[in-house]
Length: 122
Image (cartoon, rainbow, N blue to C red; front, side, top):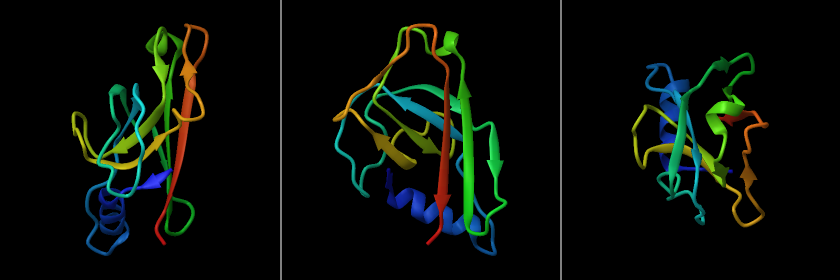
């Protein structure tokens, strides 16, 4: 996973004394790309969904969880995912993962998906 500059900035605001914005959506990536800290978003977003739970029980960390059912994903192929602040925010992902170089996940109507992402402020 690559922690993007947008994510570092947003996380610092979130964990700082003034509060701020926080990631509220995850999206799946239907394309492949190389990623680095200057990557601004997934290459081909689809299956965007609200984050279903936040766990802040560990100091300076947050665990984000989102679930997709088999019907929502049927017939799709996933090459990665991203975490972002709001729906439709193209190019504003806090963190991006793309595993196209090592494979993909094909959803045939029998698989569900749960993504858990732990963000640490170091």
